[in-house]
Image 1 (tube, rainbow, N blue to C red):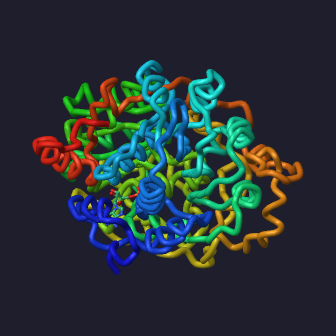
Image 2: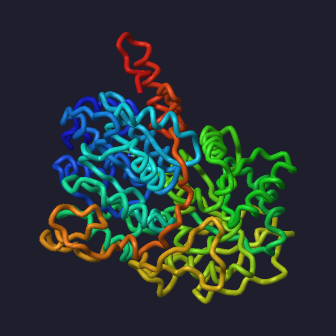
Image 3: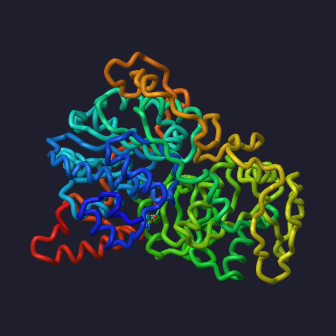
Length: 525
Ligand code: AMP
């Protein structure tokens, strides 16, 4: 199947051709015709499935075909995302895909200067990608109006609830026009998201792009057991011995990130970090350098676990296991993307056995264990109780490459979320609501039922008040990492900052070509 057979317009087809997209991914095949037809959508889809293009392409087409002009302070299509990094990435995707269309796109999130963003809003926008807290601030300041809004996208909706944006979302939904197209994307489908879908969506098409734990099945995973105190040295040893290239390393706490970073710098290894204590511009810079291969190691808390698309990242290392098993899947999903080979290595000490057990249960996978000579654990990591691969001593050779295999008795389908109870939550994580980690099992309610939505979800006219899944689902009031507004990625004059994603790089080349032609659009945004 080609993109042309999905009835995409020429301006989009030319862009897709120039960035090398040949065939639509499964989620694109399902979503694009439905969104073009104006339907609401409920999609269980993670980053890596092509979900961004699945909503961006048809929405850009609709906006271009409608031919309206956004008046000052108005926005026609709003895309809400949980983190600043994802906002930047999704914005870059809109910018890339919409390159040949006369549409104005911008991004708004916290931690960067507000003025350039306000200037963009004053002119009116066709697409605004934003994190919820700042978006609300902009609206309350009178800088942003929704009278012309025709489409709303909630991207990584589960993460937005996890990060405590429920109250902000409720407040936003209450001021959006009732007549609009709404697309809800979520990696997981806990009850809070299903409740949100019932409230927000009208007769939606439901799409399941892939099982939530797909990454766990496609990425080669293994564990090195060791003592906690050995981990920094073991990491450096493996890096050198295995000749690792770029590595994304996950550490549980911000302090732990900085400690490992200091150690790597002491060893003369090029490394940078991302965590919630760093200023936003420093986070953006670190990510850009890593994506551009200007730095070998990126050490991060779970702030980088979701959504980020890093081209051809070969390896993720879990220096610490995550406190919530589900985050393991998101972490390792940063590698092995778009069919590329991926590897995930976890350094596990005795205290982390419960976390390991939770991960194995969630993924239905027994992670093969091995030990590295000279770094054996004095405090043995107990068996997880699942039938596991025997410990393999690497004895100076290459680590065993045995693939993770399904655990006997592991749930084949949706599995309850398995946060390990004995461990404190990672400090970068806000408390998470209880909820299933299941796929989309439940049928959505019939149209009539959905129309009785509560005001909290932007209440379309005639909706009686109803409770909010979002409010129930997340610990309200915590604004996560979204505190201010910015327009990073675009300079005040509309300069495009291109990150090293595949599409963006191709677009940069295309932009160069277009700008060099008379009448080219290269610099207009
Ligand atoms: P996403 O799931 O939106 O984060 O996309 C993951 C990656 O797949 C991004 O690098 C996209 O540029 C890329 N991608 C999306 N759709 C396609 C496609 N149809 N063909 C090739 N690459 C794609």
